Length: 360
Ligand code: SAH
Image (cartoon, rainbow, N blue to C red; front, side, top):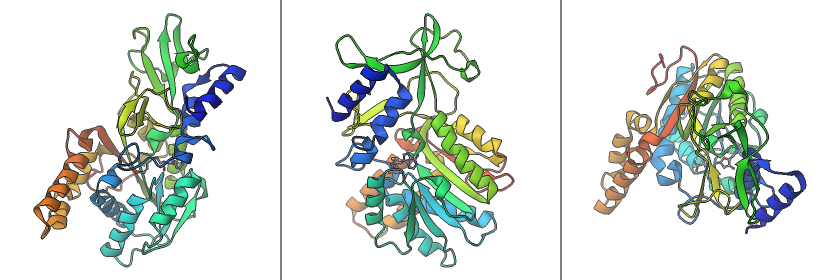
């Protein structure tokens, strides 16, 4: 039992079962015992490895895309380059190095949006010797004015989702309660979903079927798109996901590079859920922005991943070249992250930035 298990049990004993969304929010962001607030989740010693932690080439190619988006928007003055949910700060570190090489006239303000004070401190260490100074903000609403070019990698999968489960009495919100054995358990709660949210096939789904809805994700996307629509700019969001709405339980816990039961180690395991990119794109389109989607594999390969890998490996030892080939495979291979991870661009309508086509 983790310290957070005790806290969650006390909350349930006092107020009844809590929604999956409230459980997820506590697990990830409880100020004393939350995963992102207290842990060092990334890298080999942590619980999982993200694309920027796999290879510098990821950040380099994202930098090329953001720079191209800035140019496609007319190379506006006073631009702000931002990252939301920067983890260890590795992606921004790789991007800043790349910007300095691409074009010395490109001198945007650099902003980091991080909800966890502990991770913000870690990011400051990572960027301590960066060629440009960055500023930190807790919320995207606090970002400085100006055309915004923003990236988020594995941000949306870390936001709390609501789950609904089909029961004999119809769809009910899923909740975390305390079972007969005294352990935390998933159960059907009292709330019912808005019928308009139900995906196709919901009516005939078998008992026990699950569907997910992520109002917190849509709310964050709404804030970002409102800003992008108001002042010119572009967004790029990379995550493990699908184009919904769809049935399926995607809530998962990862601890020390392996799957864990979602209720076993609150605060000590990463909790994520797959991202419904159709829902995010709909939010962008509601702001009259275009929202083309591709896979991480296509995105990186079309931006020149193989050429970059070739240049990076030139003149290096066979072992180094093998490592770089392995990184390409992990980032873009269809069996690795290439197909499962998707890249959503958010652009002003009429502006296209390769590899996304304008008609998307
Ligand atoms: N982008 C990093 C880290 C991904 S983990 C990487 O690819 O390695 C998710 C990150 O999002 C963490 O830094 C977490 O603290 C942050 N985060 C989660 N919710 C957030 C929110 N609402 N606003 C800003 N950052 C958030």
